Length: 258
Length: 258
DNA sequence: GGCACGCTTCGCCGGCGAACGAAACATGCC
DNA sequence: GGCATGTTTCGTTCGCCGGCGAAGCGTGCC
Image 1 (cartoon, chains in turn blue, green, purple, yellow):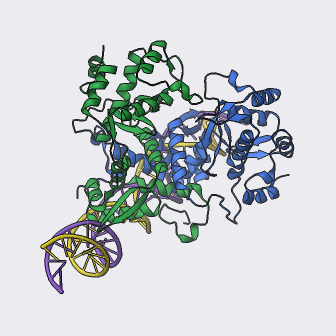
Image 2 (tube, chains in turn blue, green, red, purple):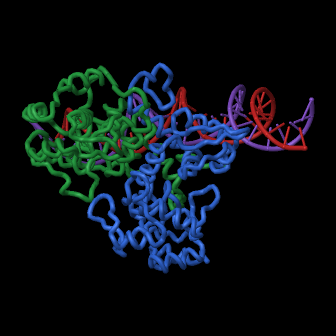
Image 3 (cartoon, each protein chain N blue to C red):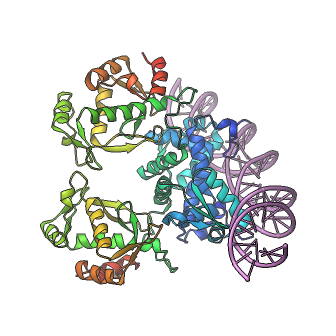
């Protein structure tokens, strides 16, 4: 039989501009659980060493090495050798974008207030998405800014209202001064199927939270911790409370935070 | 060994909200060449029968049936039974979006004037991307607007020049009135790796084309037909000709000057 | 009803590729 | 130089998955 399988592609085929075959190869590179774990862990744009990724994937070093090589050659990963460590990272933002798009379809459609009795992964509460805040907290924050009238939503992108401009300036946030970048727009989240705040403003808020000690990055993860002080300030400044987060998860949150 | 593979996931695992595993399963569903061919052929939002898809994939009917079942159960496809035919289609726009995102990373960076001697699928010629025009036509139109000096490109977003403003107003297009939305920006396309025109202006042009009978939507598809009148008008108003499309880029540029 | 057709189910085969361990290679620290 | 550590290469084993054909439903047309 002459049918091609994903792996049959040899050098002689590379000339064929065959989008479907290329698509299949890229998808296959993501398809293995070990590799998908690596890729997900790299979604935060941190670079990780081969052994770190082996642990993440739950496989031996040799196996991980093979996986990493494969993904690198497919253009999914880029490699930076540093001393005797070799750091792997996502090759570019298109890769991250593709992964997130896949995650959107991968997550089941219904279970949006997922209401799973199981413990939620910390990633769901608060995490960074590129350079802004996502997860339950990100969504709630986004909603509060709209509710407070700081953001206007009459188009695809958000607009900073005079009130919002003033209020944010008082916090030392004036994202319009940054370079030409979309100021604020709804960024769809895969974990909670609702938008959070992307763009320069979103980035400024994450930075603010980190600088003021409201949020703390968990080492080597996109997960964010909300400090006790953080909850107080978020409540005082934005009216953001634990209870105002998605109910089922709010209950879970209460237990985990100080 | 207790490691999980893509296929080991059983009903008992479904409760586990394990994004990486779900990601892997979805990716695996795309990963096989036969399936990726089916999916690509469905990117136009046409529904196709199982046998049609079997032909597209280049496999037997039974094999195709198994593939289709699998993708349907994963939520990639939706099924509409009609008489003795069973029509399969992409389950939703998120699926299309994920596929397009994957195609962007899958397509090699260089080979952009694809120059495949084979006939280009109609999707490649002209199709809608959200609410604006993509495909070869979209790219060419985008290029013409820049070449005519109607659009200025000194930043991420495009700026409407006075000339352009006037010319478009004469056509009844004044997209600035729909403010609060990005006016115009380059939107990357997977089929032709070059930007076409997104934003309010892109949407306005598509609307214009449809209203004036230059373009017609194919039923149940994102593909666009360009009418004879459409070609005449596009040539007269924008200097856009049929010959200038679907050629290696050198020829494309030369043909469209003036 | 009966035949044709579309599609799916079943059973089998062959091969890709994922996993591991051991050994080779590279780098850095003492 | 030696040793420890990080990473890759090699060789082997094993099982999932894609492929087909034949047979089993279901639908529609004479």
